[in-house]
Image 1: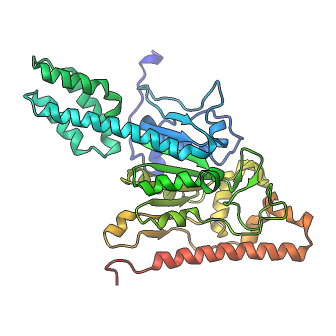
Image 2: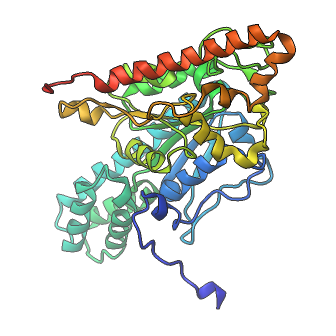
Length: 403
């Protein structure tokens, strides 16, 4: 009887906060630290796109909890579909992911070409009808699964005697797994995205291809012991920055916006769930490259209260002005509108309050006198303020025909 129980259809739109949680997660029982800031984001991705995702995962924390042999937290839905996951070297995850994307794209285009040849013949009206619908929404990932299933069923039911048509149908059905539009994702941490894999990441974004990049920003090399990366903020103590990092955090997102045709989003789930959902949905739907940078609290931060409050820490980060929520949508520029949208409001709490709750900052007191610590804290606060003020200028800029 249990095997006969069928899953219920989602009664809500899955790209809403509430609606997304009616979708079955295709990531479960990972080996990540309890309270890890990374796993909630990937769980959400699988709820939204899991049945058609293909993932190239950079080596790092997300590849360790994501596929520590002999187990994996990625699973499949009731129809047997789930994320297709692969891991290459630390330094070439972007190139690897682009290869996966281009390979699947070429095969799908071959199937499309063969289908067009089939339609030139005298075939069933059902085949023409389903093929026309498939072509009409060729780039629509959300409709892709159902349209592909309808097309496969129509092709499989062909009972005519046209030998050439049968040959084309056989060729298309051999490629049936590629008829659906895949959701291509490259996932990694800040050590990969900001540092070691940046060259490949930049190449992917510059390509103009419809690939999505998701950066789990812990602001350190989490998997290898908490070394400083270019994402580490000014003043934070980490390996190779024992006295506090002396320079500012690299603004990877803002750098990506300079291309003009890359969708960019900076999110924090615990601070604004609606913004998180919207950015992820828009990035995936955008027919071009996208990059999402997500703030992810880590055990290496030494959070007072532990990772049980990781979502609260994301909220704290935004309210104190430590982290900022924004997105850049090239489609708005095409309409003559400002593509930069700043969601973060001015800070409502003291910046120093955020720093004082993490050992990576309070450890400065063991190395310096209070005056020096105050100086470092002030520089860190000023760097965050400068970044926010720059975002304000971008969000208020006149664009296109705007007066």
